[in-house]
Image 1 (cartoon, rainbow, N blue to C red):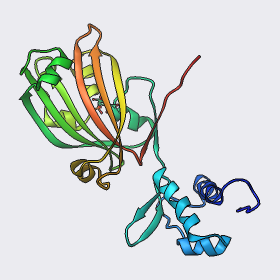
Image 2 (image 1 turned 135 degrees about the vertical axis):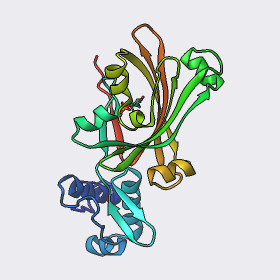
Image 3 (image 1 turned 120 degrees about the vertical axis):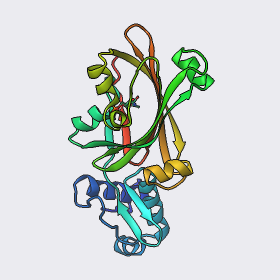
Image 4 (image 1 turned 90 degrees about the horizontal axis):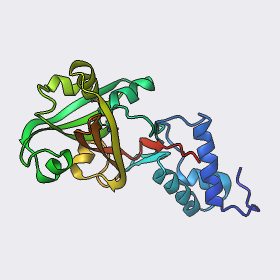
Length: 240
Ligand code: 16G
């Protein structure tokens, strides 16, 4: 397992070995990892080397540390294809998970200037400001702040936005959603994001901004989503 004559660094061999155990299911999500001392003794390597390997696995989301308790195997990341213009509800259902939303803000406000500009509506025109924690099988995955023109999409209720916004827009209002531009950025969790998403302040976050338009070019929504970096990875297929 650990080959001291190999040109591969020992910490790297340990990383690959532990990854293998996780991928084969020998180590399951929630399992606790042997201590640094146990690994060090077992492979006759230094504790520093073990620590380096564990830190790398924590940083890449395979493991997580709990202060004073130990190191554990993390849940598998959700792999999201960036292909079609889908909703959170559709994405979760497609992978057999139960989507839900916890509403943490829902009001009609005068559009802030940067929002009215992006939605191409009059400055201070009424917009819905919707803040939702999006959950999959009861686990918080993302925090989403949505702006939608209240003159375009009328009659939204707390009940509607607690289930699927896209479903309501398309099926109840017969508004045809066409395309979206998405910008992805890395960030770290603020205190509030950490509380809502049940993660540590400063944990990695993937920020996604989606600007969605209708077939006639009207701007439908400006959405800022903060996805948990430890639970999500995004895949794009590139053709040449
Ligand atoms: C996704 C979209 C968001 C859209 C929402 C509708 C991203 C980054 N964002 O979360 O723009 O408003 O789905 O979901 O994918 P719903 O129909 O489940 O309410």
